[in-house]
Image 1 (spheres, helix red, strand yellow):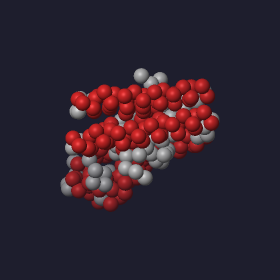
Image 2: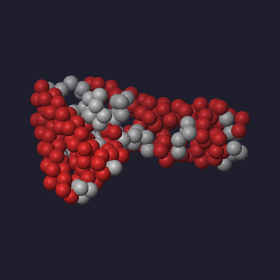
Image 3: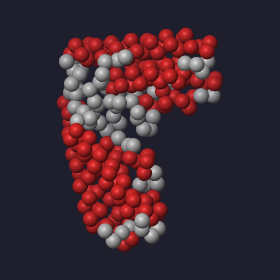
Length: 241
């Protein structure tokens, strides 16, 4: 695949999130870097917005806007509890002798801040690693039994949520011909926009900004309504601006 091409697994709902985010970032971060290129950059952003709006229209016509979401209160509570449990575990581990070593194994070498920002599927994997870390350092953690129970319970609840959302995504995966055509058009536009913006940034030594502009390239997503490759659902998209 050509570098910076659109991920072919971007589904019909995520086109709205990635499109809106990309347009906003282009206008905020790219316009002004090369004043001579600004009129062209604005045209490129406008065309991506137009195809994103066309995608929204196709989804709305088919009645496909209502989707399963992680933003519902019950789901949000499960995720918040998982993060809180991991945060408390790390604080406890840090209070023990050689706490830095224990925490490193619990978090697999990552920082707590990075781990807590992960999406639900990857957060579940982090909890699995935490359970292994507790087991490895059980002799240094007097309350290891209770912590194992707490982290296991948080992981189970999050895994159940991820499974439910994954099934819901599978159940609504089918597309009408109109939606499929709009998505194909959008993917072409998104990919070409990446190449154009890369061409603007590269001579300026700013190609490293690409993940800030196109959220599907980012390790930690910021666009509301996207998922990783293990199938996290998306929130109901709002009409493009």
